Length: 607
Picture 1 (cartoon, one colour):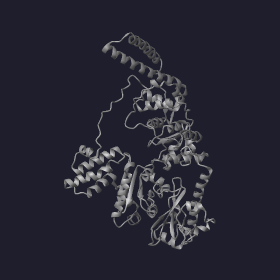
Picture 2 (tube, rainbow, N blue to C red; picture 1 turned 135 degrees about the vertical axis):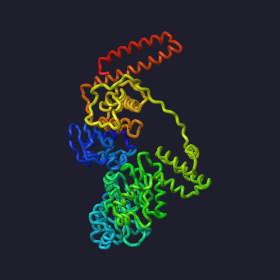
Picture 3 (cartoon, rainbow, N blue to C red; picture 1 turned 90 degrees about the horizontal axis):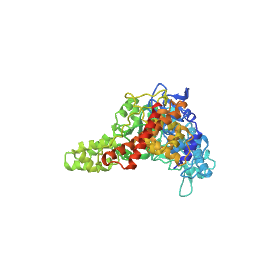
Picture 4 (cartoon, rainbow, N blue to C red; picture 1 turned 45 degrees about the vertical axis):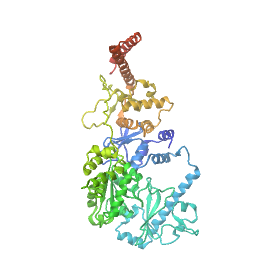
């Protein structure tokens, strides 16, 4: 795990404007920078980047975050990879589980990347001198432009062709990169021979492996690089690096089974396709794709093998499901694969078919129902029995509930009976609403957003705690002056504020990387969502520095009044029920005086 101290140091060294400007053209307007949002289609610039807060927010789709969050969202990276990419831009070495990679380890990994890049250049050059390979691609209607875009190459029909680019053909690096094979007799030869070669990129665009396809009826049809320090096939997807923008533009990703399917679809304008690398779809694949889009369409041949592959994809996706995302399954006619379908029917027909793909829930119930005789009690019982281990693994609570309703209908049971049968019956405790704070309105002049669209009517005025959290997010040192006992913990905002106070009381410094760094401090904690939400409201807001201190004092005074009022109410209740002793009556008198003073002071302020 990367230490929080390193994350904070990293964010203090980078400028979010520089980071985002590598990917988007930004235009300065006032204190902030603006662009058309890369995460949803729009014609007007609603994507705002604040250099002072080191935070971005889109007023159209709501995307927001720090420099790390932007790389995760835009490039589809995990947290660790995003930190590593950002660190590389400023020359910092990322600690790994408290362990710094040695120079030797770093050099060895760089040599692997260099070897893969050199091999890719060689294969690409050989394609120009391989008439059989060129003829094959022409037969498959692959244009020169698409071949260049995907970096297609050709591995000559020679045992040691790579010796031409690697004079030290016996180097350990070649074997570690998976470019060569050492047999039992100690002879070394090229892994890829007489094949069309497809470079496989990581999320940063570096070549980490190759896939090779035969041009005749040889076997295996596809040959992949082995697992290496750079390549883990259960995590990587062919074409994802090149498809990222197209996935965002289309609003979904299509997962196919072969490299040529990806290339052929791109040739016909369907550029949002990726392929697994000789393995069934894994949970890691699903998670990686859900970072890119909220809709995944798995495309399979319509034969029995295709349905088996689809079922494996469904099983491996269950834990990764989210209620705000959709997984669907497209089964092509039996005579077609994606390549042949798009050639025969065209890109628009393929897009239409993808739009109408069968949802995961429907596919699950349909497939299970087909395996059982639902006109018998035994068949319906068998359906529920087989569904149980699948439904209980669904990671999306609302989707799981919907599937249980569908299962109940198919098995002629009630939903309650299904919940009991699956062991998913939950008590439905009524949640108590937090007490309403009366007599409070937000202080005037606390902040002035230049653009703050409100959907669904007027926004409810912020509470005292919400206003205080806004102040602390932009002036974090103020939290050190807050008595934690005054902060109510009956709201997410209150608990987040207490967490910031605790952070400073334990000696952690105020994050130096602006608002973005403070949000990153609480990533993957219960406080991350409310802090990120409030921060998004502040990205294009300006506080009048002259009112910061009076505003802080006003809110603090309001909290003190609330605290005193609560203690007074408790004493008055005790007085009505059992009476008060001298000590209790004395305390009540003190509180009444204190409340009067606080109220008088409040009347002279904006409260």
